[in-house]
Amino acid sequence: MNAATRTQPQTPQQLVALATQHAAYFNPGTGWHYSNTNFILLGMIVKKITQGSLSAALQMNAIDAAKLAHTFFDGEQTITGTLASGFDTSGTDVTHLYNPSWAWADGAMVSTTGELADWVTALYGGAVLDDSARAELTANPVTTDQGETYGLGTMIFPYSATGGAGVAYGHNGDISGYHSMAYYFPKEKTSIAVVVTADGADPNDPFVSALGVLLGY
Image (cartoon, rainbow, N blue to C red; front, side):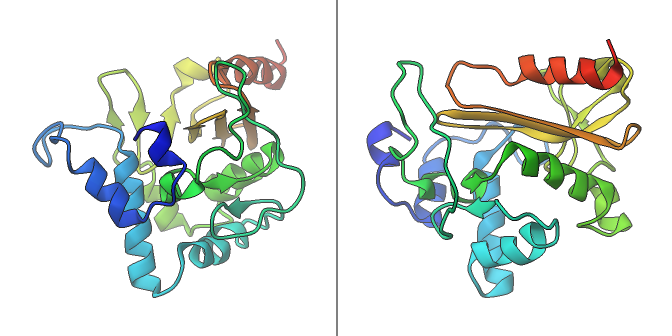
């Protein structure tokens, strides 16, 4: 999607139509590829099942369930508090440049770094899902051609990648001007979340530093 398109409101149907203009990476069931479009489709399924807005479903089943006070679904909920500015690689402030509907269920969430940590703690620590549903997130992991391991909407860091902190569950997030990482370490019962507010900046750098503090090195 080009920059001009991203400044205009988009419906989920328009986003899916844009994606399906392109050929599939492979036939169903024969490969794996990260898909933003699949999260749009999931949002449409949630709306169909609940017969309401996606923001209402997120508020009840995620935000309220995790007791988050400063997390919002941008475009459908009013953001309160001070929003940190995000910048592109030229230094242009893109905070309000793009319409949040172009990301919708794929990435239109607004939160604080602290509540990102609270969210992954609640999600993987058992406060949001029951044991059976939570187990499904990591029950059948797939290793990608880039060496990453994925469950259902969950990236899995193995012991070898955490320097001894144990397996970690979470995800990265990228949208124009903002890049994040949030992972829960069940062995340590600790979460680390990082947000950087500039394209080209890497949240992995402060994440590794925080991991070093956690492990005491």
